[in-house]
Figure 1 (cartoon, one colour):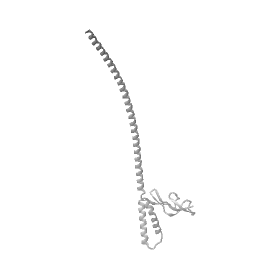
Figure 2 (cartoon, helix red, strand yellow):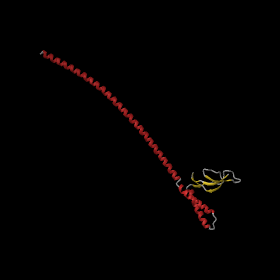
Figure 3 (cartoon, helix red, strand yellow):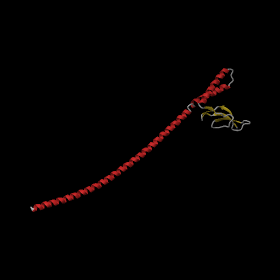
Figure 4 (cartoon, one colour):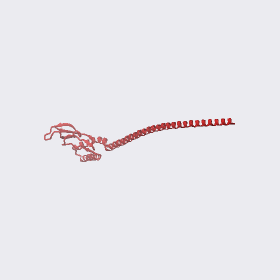
Length: 194
């Protein structure tokens, strides 16, 4: 019986030792697992930080793209607005250029002597209506007679020495010039003193 007791005690002490070894082994596994978890967490944290940096970079790029697109849109809007205003301001230009020869012909007709005053009065009324309609749209005659020659508004066709007139003065208008607001429709053709 004593032998059985000793065997049981030996077996019990061996089990205790084995249990203690198991506990130690388990503690080591837990320590390893904690280190692995920390390494995994650090890796995951680093991965998340890299992902955040990448997303922030993408956001910055998208904000830049948005700002560029917005600026392009604003520039396009301003350009279209300016074009619209220019078209509105000078919409009559082509029509006025087509009408100027008609006005020239009316002036030539009025300059001719005629015995039919009613006919002359009719041409004069048409001429005045055309001039008034063009004035309403901003078309004006360039006044240059007896003024210093200005190549921006006039085209010198001839030069002539005139007594009592200094050089560079317009002495005769051969064809009237016209401007539309601040734009030249047709330069005046003039004779300038030498």
